[in-house]
Structure formats: C-alpha cells, structure tokens
Length: 327
Image 1: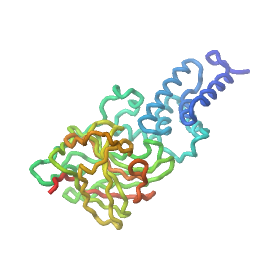
Image 2: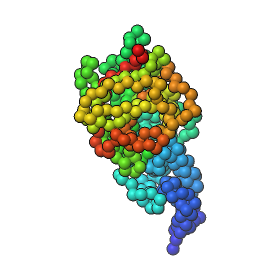
Image 3: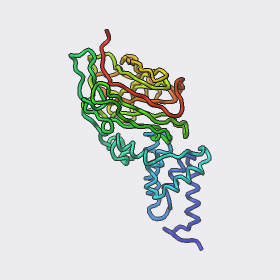
C-alpha cells in the first residue's frame, strides 16, 4: 500500500523527482532535487526557493558545491546533497569538500552567508575595516604593516580566501612573524590542490573604509620570501564589490627563501574578472582602492597556466607594503 502525502502516492512523488532531474542539466539537478525533498504540501515552494538559492550561489562562486552548501539547510539533509552529487553522471567523484569552511569564509568577508540568496540590491554592504591614508610627505610611506601601526590586524582585516568557495579543497592560513618593530612580516602558508577543479589559495582584505588614495603614487612595493620560488599575484579593486572587476599583476619569488624586493607599477596591473582580461575597462582609479588580495593560483590570465606553480605545501612571507613614486 502506498503512503499518501498531499494527495500523492510515494511512487508519484518519486516519479516527479526523477522527471525534474532529467529536465535539468545533471549538475544543477543534484542540488535542486536534494532540496526538493517531497512534493507534498508546499513542495513546489521548496523547489522554487532551492532552485533560486542554487542559482544565486552558483552565479556568485561558479561552483555546484557552493550552491549545495547554501541549499542543503533548505532540504534539511546534507546526505541527500552528497547522494545527488555522487549520482550526477557528468561529474567526477569529489574530494572531501568542507561546507563549514565555505560558510566561515563567506561570513568573514560578506557577513551572513544567507545574504547570497538575495538579489544584489538587497545584500547590503560587505564587512569593512578602517584604513589609514598614506603620507604624501614621505617618498615611500608604509601603508600596510600587518597590524603594527596601520590598525589592519591580521584576523580582523585580512582573511584566507581559498578555492573552497568554488568546491575546492586547498587550504591556507595567516600568521604574523617578527616583533613589533620594522621586521614584522605576514606569513601566508598552506597547501594547494587541483582536486575538484580547484587550485588556488589567497588572502584578501575586507573592504577598506575609506578606500586607500594612491593618487599621488606610481605603485606598491614590498619584500617577499618563498622557499620554492613560486609566482603569485597581487590584485587590487577600485570598487567595493565582492565578485567584481579587479586589477592584478604577477610577481616571482626566488627559490631557497632568498628575499626579493617587489615593485608593482599601477600601470602594469591588468583589468580582469575571474582572471579573464577585460580590454574595455576604464582606467584604474588609484584614488579609490577598496581591497587588496594576494593569490597563489595554478592559472594566470585567460586560462593560461602559471609556470611557477607547484601543487602542495607553500609559504610566502611579506614585509610591509609601501607606496612609491617613480624616480
């Protein structure tokens, strides 16, 4: 005897779930079916909300795993999400992804993760930190010294932003080494992995308020040390958006932990969106730098691979960041 719920037998509900899965592309079906649960009372509303939530997360982070993390609570069953992902014929077997770390990352930078389910005009402002403007009287004023005098303490103003936001399993952490004097450095370390189509670790600032004004300067300079001689990127944003246009340039380190002096002219920064160059972008607004990000990625721009990338453990040490004027 079939159980009746909302005027439908269990077999009828299962048949409708299968039809929904066939109608959608396999990846999205896993998320939506998992959130649908039962097509009994209010079932259609649950499916609609879950589908919108999945699309919102997918559009912001470009991954099915991110969509599943936000929609799983709607379904009330993370096991159903995992099962749907495993049954999706177009996806390889996933490595162990951490939805809790995904939610923690989003919370640090954006506030409540559930705001991602709202349209952009209702999401409100992201998390912000107070910034100190560079001194125009100095030739190379220090603008960031990792919490020594700049009020931008690591853990409050800076946080890890890894490929967990798109379903990856790379992991990084931040620490401060050295004393309270000029030898204070930031240590960015972790492990990169190409599992689940990932391959990057990064750390980023919260939104600077007010934004940094580098209008009277020509670039940023800092010392860097990495024992494996890897290639990293510095990315700036002249807007307060989260997933928005950025301006990036790569820099190389020397093998053997030799310290190198890095100077990045603002004129060398490449306008990009998710590492795809944007040739028609307006010039960089140096007077309104809202965030900074350092990235170790398997890719450079437009799908090109990073020739100095190495999967596995890494450690980068950065000295204070200075603004400079060209001679």
